[in-house]
Length: 161
Image (cartoon, rainbow, N blue to C red; front, side, top):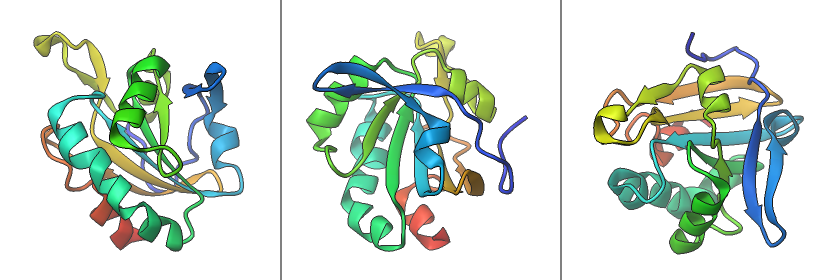
């Protein structure tokens, strides 16, 4: 079942690259008592993700945070090393947290998995954005076409804050 507004965000352990290597990040801890924007992408370094989706959130990070958002997180079914390298290449440090869902555990709990095996990519995430306030999802934007970031883009999220 796909996550919807009014649902409690499911807990899962994501991984984040740090100076000390990959470190676990609990979704429950990340969202507890905060307003958080999480957006999911099919894959780091892929065209729409690298040219549109992540850059949109980087460009609008200050405006999003000015609306009371404590954390902006990018989630992908990639490992923490790839997410760390992608974040570094995109200049995300200090603006967007790069969160790896390497086994797709969180993605599956959201009901937002994408079978990209036809492209040799295996299980991935659909393109989405969530606004989470104190652990409760208040907005879900999902793009039907993984090649576009409209419903899940930074402008869509800004309009819902």
